[in-house]
Length: 229
Image (cartoon, rainbow, N blue to C red; front, side, top):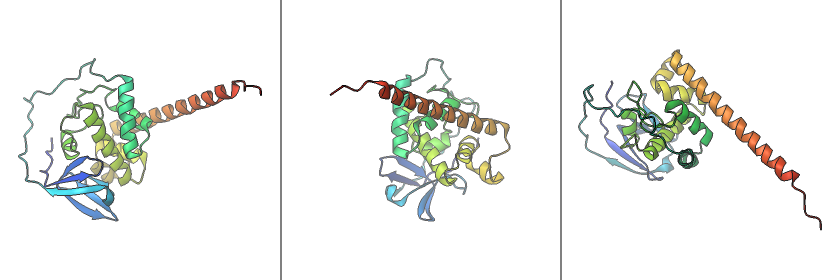
């Protein structure tokens, strides 16, 4: 596993979220927060969203080894549907993202299992890699509220980076921005292509179901007899 570069700055956003980054730089009217020493792994925010930038000492890098205990996914480690929906609704409102999009991503990533761990080490509801989670200020990826907040922030940044191209943002979420930039599109990885198609299909299904429910509710309301005067 490639270890992330040590953070040199802590950026506090006006929504109270802290982002640990290697450095920041202006980029066409926005501020780019680099999560590692390279040029590929970054998120972008509006200048007015930043409350403070603080230089911090480089923390020691903890080496991960195969001997370290990794929490295993548990079949009963799930939030209730209502709790998850409330959490995703709040995160979606903060970032102006459709809650059904976030729900579709969670379903594809973890199936709602708060302690899910992938074979590559991604963790939690939205399957954050340890380095990405640390850069987003997520202290514990198995805390669902932290994981959702970090994953939503990351997806929002990817959508900004790829000019609201959902397919590219999802491909970058799955395979990394470097792969998307290298191939100038969705990478030719079978897993990534299936992932993008699966999330978009689920998102479209949820939107169509939501619209059908709204039409049904309107029709039901219109069928109620009006009181006579």
